[in-house]
Image 1 (cartoon, rainbow, N blue to C red):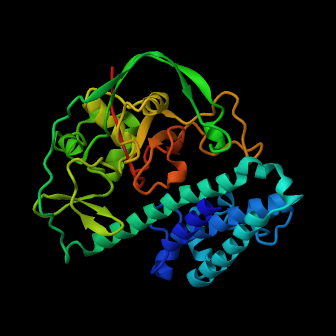
Image 2: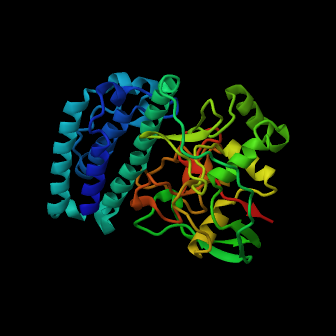
Image 3: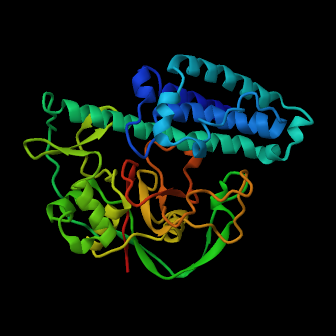
Length: 383
């Protein structure tokens, strides 16, 4: 109960001081408006606690807005109610739901979804995933604002980011059979069932690629050399004129700096680079004479505690998301998750905006190869 209350409060706090316009505008074509995530969170909470468990759909009869599959991204903002009334309604409803969970008695408490506190954990993790989505929207708001203001209000970092050469600071993982996957009831269905996989020997970098190391790729014409890119990646790069990470800018003095939810800031040479797509991560790996890890390699290295900074940035993996053998959709029964489409690549790890409820080696994030608004970077594997 304390964990649920904490993530509810943390999510609402992101909207303190937000204007109604920023709350409902779509700032990125792959993201919903921030306000939709707020309303979606309480809708899903009510869907499970009231409609599914108690057969009461008084809060969820209208599924045209907050059920994602029923409402296209571009329609969500205009249909949102005003921020303040929605925030007040959500706060009151969460108070009521928290009381329900604290005081549940038979026959309510005997519902199978309450076993081992499964549905509480599920709702908490649902909030956690969208908490980070809202943080992405806040970054996009700041990015758009800086694009408007940077001519009249230029930013000059105190020090200039300099490129650093790659150093093969790596760990050797012996070939063998390793356990992969999560544990019931704390893991989501796509992490289950736990199973063994066989891995060949590999060498994995101890840390993710840093800002300074990524700058070396840029300055070595990594974005201009077609040899490092797949055909589809090169076409995407050319069509979108991609030349640097999503949240990087360069001023008239040729100094690089970053943009986050607070605005422009100085890039630290040792911080992991983020805001890159799978296309860019793969190109960097090829340029470096390496490759991206398979998710099983990453998860094994993390479980063995042989790599560092595993929660500093989401890290692109080489493989597409797929269902483990024996996968069973739960609690959305008989519904294959939409990311099992042979298009989404796995990301492992976490970012500074990831809530602790989903920070675990087994957790499987997934995005399309062109998406770079996420807090994603990379780690290398060497043969």
